[in-house]
Image (cartoon, rainbow, N blue to C red; front, side, top):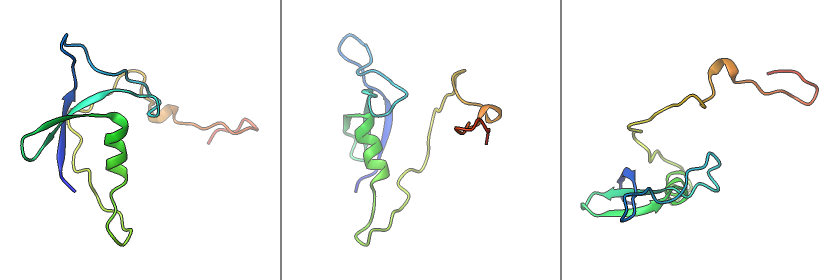
Length: 95
């Protein structure tokens, strides 16, 4: 296992971002530049990065923390607020 840092979204030769963001992670095709400890930078899609973050286990099957920090996180007006975080059941009850 090797540690790496996602440094920014990847751009093509015309400075356009590669891939398309979607709130559904299954169809999110955004590509990011990833910096490795040896100084190399490679491009990886959102799904490959997420798969590697969530699938780290040791030889005995124990999971361990692989994500140390989230830098430069942003929130916009489409984010769910705590006051709006309700689930409505089939019978109409909010919980």
